[in-house]
Length: 117
Image (cartoon, rainbow, N blue to C red; front, side, top):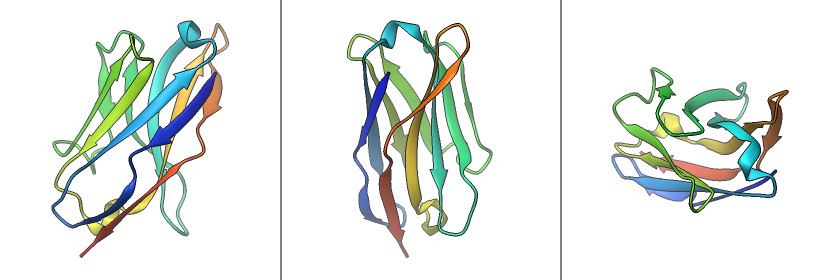
């Protein structure tokens, strides 16, 4: 499974961005897809997750009500709609997939999101 993120950039506080994660390869084997982020000097943290059918989602408390995770299986793409962005949301955002019987981890290269105050 290969993952490629896009959609990051610079935005003012209160603004919005939509991240995309395009999957290729053995996409049929993907069970769960997730977004993580890592800010400078901090550990990587889970932002949101979605099951293969898209029926179940969960979010970090810090983004609940502001971010929405979704996926389009026909396009093999996952999205993260980010609204009401805050400077604390500044980080590199990574796409992650758990695939196969062993739930093997796959990662994208990351996309930078910078929120100015």
